[in-house]
Length: 565
Image (cartoon, rainbow, N blue to C red):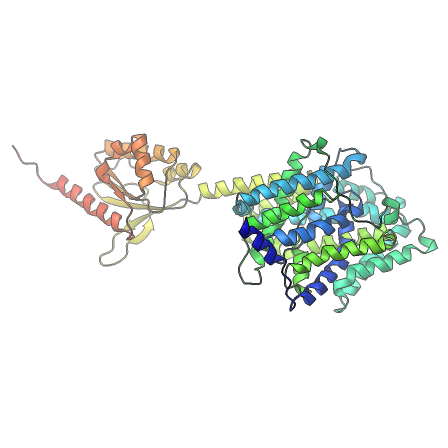
């Protein structure tokens, strides 16, 4: 407990040399995050004010608890889409409470995973799955703005169908709304080209477009104030309503996965100021604390933002205080300028999100996966299509399930069986294992890859045929395998009996103590003979050499004439 307190105190220590840079970085990100967080909440189908509240609470709390010093925890488009998908079918008057409850549940799940050091789980999500998912999310972000940027309210809930429906009803498009949205997009692209203005391009474009919307000609353009009231106050403490707990359990799990994988991308690619890469499990815990805390202050689920983290660093952030300042400054802006926030044009937020959607598309990642091979290419496409047509929370689970099946399939087919031929005065020569086991000769076999489950069956298929081999000796080198599964024991037992029925011999070398104990319990040790099992030694090849010498002696004994008594 004392160590935890001292660590927490150290994280809050202010360095006079860097506090100025942290403040500037925090101000830069706070200004950029105001329209972005409001648009992201809108993407989830809830009040834009919820996005601001999330930034006020989740961002500084995440900064205090994550293992990554510069990780920016905030509203993200992928999580917002998953939240919006989870709210389909929930009565409109309960959607905000449902989003708050989701933040609570996601926080608890992430904290538990962090406490139990489950950061290794992100290794089981292939790059191809995440590429398909994140690019699918990017397309959904773009398509999901067709209603707000055109003024046409489609009857379809699926964003792809809704966008197609909008295109098929051009006469229903409100030109004033479309003009404000397209103007926002054009201004963002214009300001991005100006170096001094690029960091504030979204803010400037939103302000100018919203100012246009205040003119009499654009009186039909909806504003934030038409959707929700923005009070000059900070969010009140509110205990989540747990009545929808069971309904939201699966969505909470999927949103947790999205947030954790996004965070792992930062943990694995952006080292801390000391040069060390952070522990993903600590980042799990930090994101969980951010979500749990924000759920008591009317916030929505948040996650690690790679773009936000990059912006903090590029803007000069040096410590955790950069992200702490983000929350503080947004709180001040809400308190002092709530009336101005209500004047932001809704199609301006939609235009901003369309730009974010296009920025989220990663052609380089797509090209990398596409050129890797047919299996990664197929996995990426399947995940991409599933993201577009399925509820997002189920698309996430499908992607994870697909990745697990892919992993098991690769392990099952990654067996490579080779023969090692002794070379006088040097290392043995490796060559393909024979298809037919030779009689009265020693065959030394070594396997590459896993030997569990389906892989054991694959091994049985590539073993040299032994039915016609007479008095053959097979030596298996098993160094590096700490234990066997029951399937492998079945394979070895059948192969050993076949060879023994032909007066042959099977030896196992490089065997661990654990495997010997398994062999004793299963009775396999009695079948093969204890003298034919050689334990692994510190020197590579020592036990194999002993087995080879014993095998040569056994064959020599076969050639010796039997003496008459």
